Length: 110
Image (tube, rainbow, N blue to C red; front, side):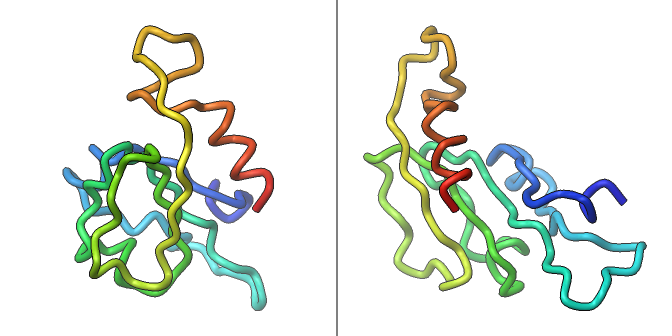
């Protein structure tokens, strides 16, 4: 029910690797014309497998990574990449080295 009212669902890459979630609205009716929320994965090194459910079901997914990460060649077209500046882990506003302010600005721009 919560996902139905959201534009995006955010998880870290650890959740994707451990649980292989779909992160979609389910068990409640999705009104006609209402899109699924965009799945956003904080993945500094692009470790999300191209075979993950959220990469293969054709729904919009955004991987947020550092500029030095190399996208896998077999990434489906429904998966987009947002690169952000890398910060030292001890820097306020940095999680896993990703600049959260820059990530939020990039999400807002979409």
